[in-house]
Amino acid sequence: MEIVIIGNGITGISAAQSLRELQPDWKITIVSGESTYHYSRPSLMYVFMGHMRYQETKPFPDHYWAEQRLDLVRGWVTGIDTRAKQVKLKDGRALPYDKLLLATGSISNKFGWPGQDLPGVQGLYSLMDLKALYENVKRAKRAVIVGGGLIGIELGEMLVSRGIQVTFLVREESYWSNVLPAEESAMVTRLIQAHGFDLRLGSELAEIHAGPDGSVGSVTTKSGERIECELVGLTAGVRPNLAVTEGTAIPTGRGILVNDSLETETPDVYAAGDCAEIKTPGEGRNTLQQVWYTGKLQGRCVAHVMAGEAKTYDPGLWYNSAKFLDLEYQTYGFVTPRPSEGETYLWWEEPTGPRGLRLVVQDGAVTGINAMGLRLRHRVCERWILEKASLDFVLDHLAEAAFDPELCRRFEPEIRFALRGQPVPA
Ligand SMILES: Cc1cc2nc3c(=O)[nH]c(=O)nc-3n(C[C@H](O)[C@H](O)[C@H](O)COP(=O)(O)OP(=O)(O)OC[C@H]3O[C@@H](n4cnc5c(N)ncnc54)[C@H](O)[C@@H]3O)c2cc1C
Image (cartoon, rainbow, N blue to C red; front, side):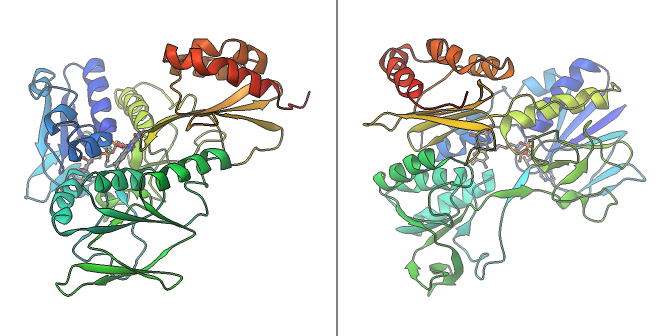
């Protein structure tokens, strides 16, 4: 049996590793245009800021892949012949497959802005983007970043670390307010301003203009303001990378459409990770799931399906973690910008912050947690939510969740006092 996996991100390699365990004799080939070896995409910023070397972003030594008999092919896939069961590469090579996994990840969003393809305009997704950034910063004193999500703030931090003046255009009236409740959003907004970003809230890009040398020289916003800059970072979200499905009959919507076993409608073709759109994702879950841990889970799940088992994807409890500049953020369960019907939001914030904790309570049980500037233990938070722990229980056992004992000693009594004082419907 010959397996071809397009993409060596977390999804593709998780699938390959699981398949190798399940089927020791199958031939497994992983194709990627970006790099020969898997690396950790979230580490891109640390390479640029000099905190890590590229070599250190590879979780497995280069000899690991041959030892596992996982064949690595470096090249861009330009077509798939699903009848002949062949993957075609840009350099003319063709790879036959019996089963094919599409794990092609995402691409940065571009919304047709005039000037979006000028030299000096870029996203932050891949090693190619990182390489472009090393070049683009050489001529940049001022940068404009468009889009107020996680990648925008990372790019801003990277540029500020090089002494570049950053203007950050955020469409919303407060940073990431379409995801974070008001207090968390306000906390991050203040932090961004304190770090010297020129944060423009309620501001949208209209056009990017070339300077005298043909590279980007300025942008104008929808309100007509012109901002001079030599670099534009487009970080207004990502969308599934569907390019390999062009010219095929593999059905796509926003992503590559799959059922809850991650099978496409095309026989022996599967899709998982950022590029997949799950038609029936389960209550409260998005059809697109574009984070690291869901890629890993989907990769492992699809391996079982490809190996012939009847298995459906279970995303488990929603979890995410990120860093806004020096502020760590963790979220467990569903914490939406505003409480849904029947939910009560409790919020503690350290006056001298930035630190905060939000508990979402429904029918007396804790159903969601946001931690800002506090490190919590994943397993404990997950257990509380899955076991529907009561608010009283969670407050009494806060110390169990604290990852850092010093933080726990310092804030736990305050948190308990503050949250017990807030009304929760009986
Ligand atoms: C800067 C940045 C920071 C992030 N930080 C976090 C974080 O802190 N936490 C978190 O949960 N998530 C984070 N994410 C998101 C996370 O990295 C993605 O969800 C994850 O990488 C998706 O994995 P994947 O394997 O599905 O796709 P990818 O990692 O995108 O891998 C897909 C691979 O397929 C290859 N490929 C695509 N098309 C072709 C083709 N035609 N031919 C050959 N190869 C092809 C690509 O080159 C790529 O290597 C971050 C993303 C970025 C960009």
